[in-house]
Image (cartoon, rainbow, N blue to C red):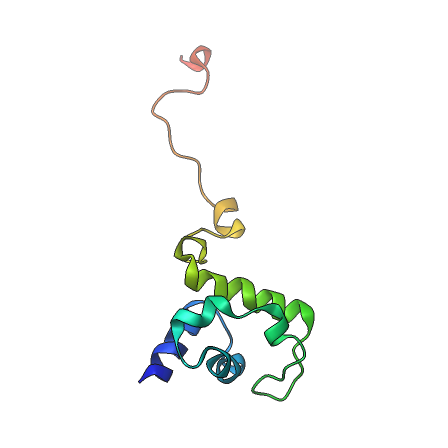
Length: 102
């Protein structure tokens, strides 16, 4: 049951399934300890596919895991740059320049 809950949290944080077993081992299956996982815990370890985790991957995973401790920083709470770039301006009932009124 705890494994299902941990996997659900990791999925919500955007962590790929190949890292789930390693993270479960590091945090003892407890979601409360995800935020305590450090880059040094991950760098050099192997993922579920048997691939060695590099520094940049470890740092990216730790950033995602920090979202467990700080829900306001999760991608769901903050719009992405792409979402911000595609937002339409709010329509204004007034013309931009009063001289444009005819």
